[in-house]
Amino acid sequence: MNNYKLIYILFLFPICLFAQIKPTKYTLQKIVKNSVVEMKNGKLSLPSNKSWEFNNIDSLYFKKDTLNAFVYKKGTKHKSLCEVVDWTFYRKNALVFGQGSNCKEPPTRKVTRNPEDYYTITIYTVENETMIDVLRFDKMIVESFIVIEVSETEDYTEIKLVRRFNGN
Image (tube, rainbow, N blue to C red; front, top):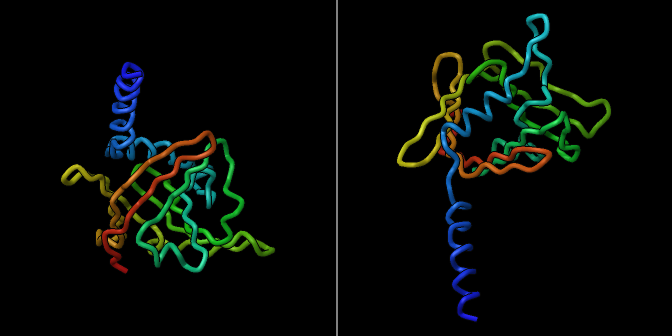
């Protein structure tokens, strides 16, 4: 019986350690790189199947400290998100901020304005924490997040962010 306990501990301990590894700057940069949409005739299609989507029911995106971004694979979308905020990356570290409503007919979306809805991001590491800063066109930080977790399923990648401050 003691041998089984020892084997269990030897296998469980490394698995627990592995599960607690924090997301790295490289991991996040790879997700952003894979999220960049292809322009057609110099134009973006918003929102894209590659957009990062945040639930915005009751303005949760603007009120909550902890946010979950979903990046869907294979063109599938989360059908239950009625109100959504999305980040659509049109080049490395550059995104368009969008808002839409999907549950009422017809679906609606706010018109994207340049430069007000066009942002850049910086991804960096401080004291073993991976951070994302969202900067507007004049390089002022408007939002800052700590990346807590990145998890993947067959259908989507989920990025859990905790707001450091809100510069709006």
